Length: 139
Image 1: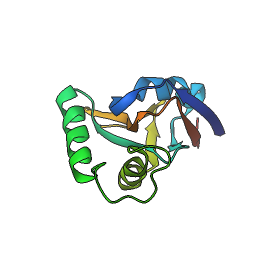
Image 2: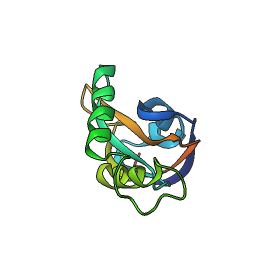
Image 3: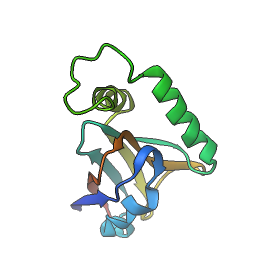
Image 4: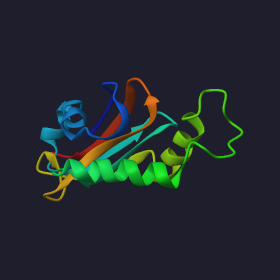
């Protein structure tokens, strides 16, 4: 089986946001797959996806603190027409990555107990974000 959906994520402010449930709701065929893969691609150059701790909000705040210290807005950027947060957002998105490939087992992603899908929003006001979800597997 193959299935593909474009999932519109609600707009969020800059930061690291758990979107696991929102993403999984966008792939209704997931429950039919016994074994397979779910590939997620964010269709933006200033936001990214990652997989990490889903319990403590401190982890998401610490990620945001670290990434802002590592890629500062106050830098000699030359791409500045779209605002001071744009070029740093591109760099952050490249460092974090645009995609995830997750194993699927018995109708769910085979994630660890404390793992969740993050939308990493690197702009102050990035707007809604689109994720293409491609599911491949056997029922």
